[in-house]
Image 1 (tube, rainbow, N blue to C red):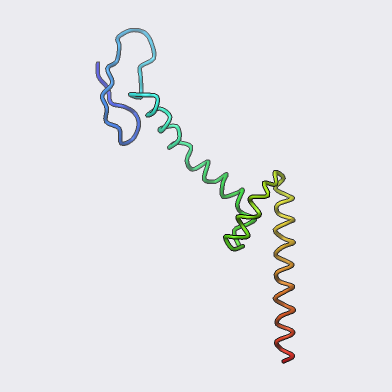
Image 2: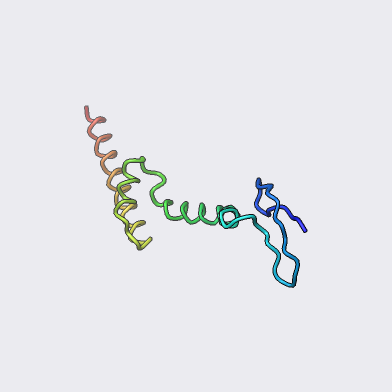
Length: 102
């Protein structure tokens, strides 16, 4: 009996061996792993977005440096990002006060 590979976009034909065993779904291990990755792609993307959330409002250079610190505790990352944001807003406020005096 012949069936088609279960992975999207793969149309390879699989020769099923008769008997009382599980039928093959994929033509190769590569197709099996690609199908797994496709099924879990959204989950991985959500995890990455959650990891990067504290850095999203910074520029790419600062975001990259903060991520490079490789802090494992999300609370530490959030506190650091908040401290940097406060520092930046204070500096902007000081500059605006100085400019208004001139």
